[in-house]
Amino acid sequence: MIYAGVDIAKTDHVIGAVDERGAEMCRPMPFKNTEAGLERAVAWLEGLAGSPSGVVGGMEATTGWRATRSSSPGATRSP
Image (cartoon, rainbow, N blue to C red):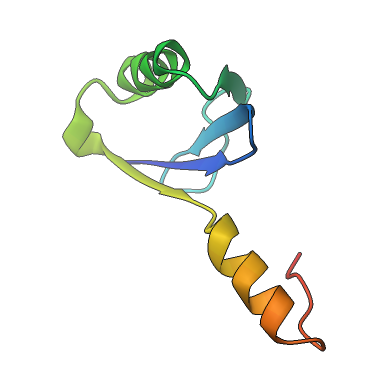
């Protein structure tokens, strides 16, 4: 099983992956916020996992953080 995470930004994202032990599978890969960029990220993951069923993925919920931050003056961003 591979666990992948995506760092989201407006135009450029970064995807990384670790195995069951938490060991980095390879260097994180940047990709653009475009259809071609997403296809590149999917191909990157498929190259690591071999099949889609071998991947668990996640990404940060940036919109939720902004909503929480703006509605709660004492809220802080988690590291």
